[in-house]
Figure 1 (cartoon, helix red, strand yellow):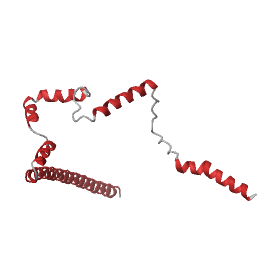
Figure 2 (spheres, one colour):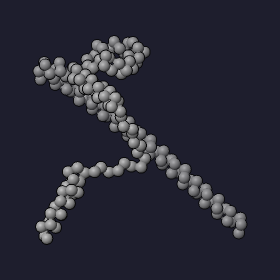
Figure 3 (cartoon, rainbow, N blue to C red):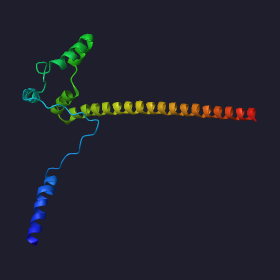
Figure 4 (tube, rainbow, N blue to C red):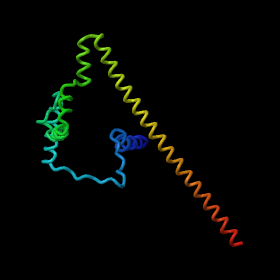
Length: 169
């Protein structure tokens, strides 16, 4: 009799609890969540084909306009408007290229390049903090002005109530 009870408890544990531990059921979706329709086999194939193409292309350093023509079309349109900037952008090496060239030159060449990078980062952070502090101070000033207006409005309302009470009595 005891063996039967033990067997039932073990089998229930395996059937229900262990399955929930190994493969937990997900939480239900929130009420505002709209479920998407399932993709057809053809759509799945097209998604897989595009994803594999982009994955293979990601192993190349510069993807180029052949693989992502829409992205390059936007950049090309922006570049057409600033003809002078295009020439400057093409001649100026990127930070990564600058560091790579400096690393080949040894520690003496790498130190100034790293200092430029860190100084650039520091100036960007400083500017960001300045703009944040300025915006924060403007926000505090606006809140204080609103509170002053609200307090003055309340004082006026209280004075009006007192005046009407004096007139009625």
